[in-house]
Length: 87
Image: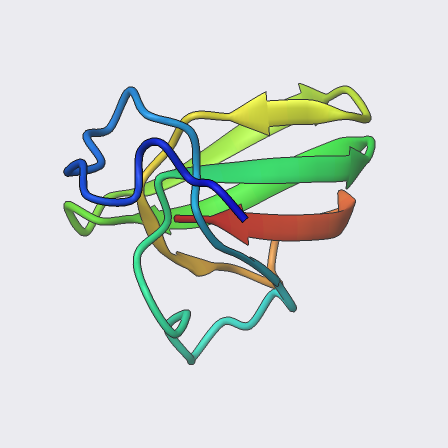
């Protein structure tokens, strides 16, 4: 299959090239820092940002893509569902 961008470096504005399901956890970091988090089901998303700050995004609608670099999605404070990490 042709991939015209195979040899190009992926910047933060480039489309994601991988994804993984996120299970919120107060103690464990994700396998890798995200470039974005997809929210499949509406609710709040509480995260530990790549910088180490804890931030809660309240009232996130379903099917929203949050362009945030996070190392952990916290179970405490997260009510949104069907989360997917994109990198």
